[in-house]
Image 1 (tube, rainbow, N blue to C red):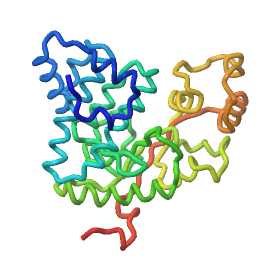
Image 2 (image 1 turned 60 degrees about the vertical axis):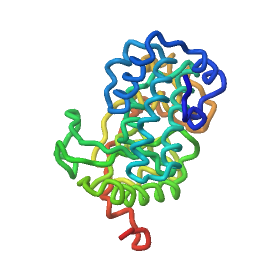
Image 3 (image 1 turned 180 degrees about the vertical axis):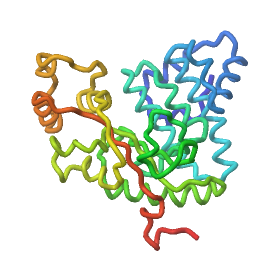
Image 4 (image 1 turned 30 degrees about the horizontal axis):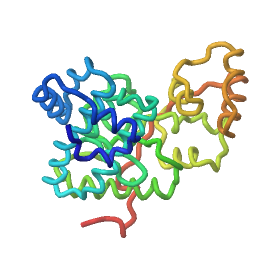
Amino acid sequence: MDYRFIDYANINDDLKTKLSDLAFKDEVAFLRLCRDYSEGIITGLGFHSDIMRLAAALKASEFTFEKYRAKGIDETIFYDTLSDIGIWCRENDNKGLKNYQWIKNHVSFELFKLGRLQFQIYKCKNPTLNYSKLPFKYGDYVISVHVPACGKLDIKECEESLASAVNFFAKYFPELRWEYFFCESWLLYNKNSEFMDNNSNIIRFSKLFDINYSINYENQTFERVFGINNLPVFKSQIKKLPENTSLQKSAKEYKLKKGRFGIGIGTIKKQAVLTPAQIIL
């Protein structure tokens, strides 16, 4: 089976070969699965292998591309958005696509990479959030901000992304009623400054947001800083954490002193990111 956009998915040659060798018992059923995936339906993918899920994401993206064309969205945005597939394949040791639930947002035309950042149309019905501390209500639409693992977290590029997102959604989704960017991430944790340099890009990124509140949930930090999914419980385990970067060293030292990692929940009012010259009338 051919994959029209395989060269834009940022996957390695070995995966391309595996995809070309992939055999389908029922090609019609597979295409139906891919069309469902492009509409946000993921139930059928739970029974398939990671390489089959990758194939489904690539094939589903062909349906997604038609939605871009119908809206008149520049195809370079489609290609940039699609490149996230390769990042998640590398997270899975290039065995295919494990995190198909996340890529659902890309192929179902709900998430767009605009410069350095990704932006997701999100109707906020997350019951775990403390809405009394947020400037929007349960069920309101927000634009959820995500930071793909694709290089340096350049603050100027992030600011430009935020500004472009306001104009993007105003132009292509004028019917969407939203007032706030929303981000839930370890990057925004209010105690990061206790082990990070105040001039670091992570701290500077967090200052773009109003941090509404933070919670002690350590998984994201261990995953993103140390590359591990199992939280170390004992001091002996913490001592074995890597120290290959300055951030790893300072985070490890902080943890040995019984510091806690966490995630921050932050918002930005959309009007706050635009200068008059950036507003498209």
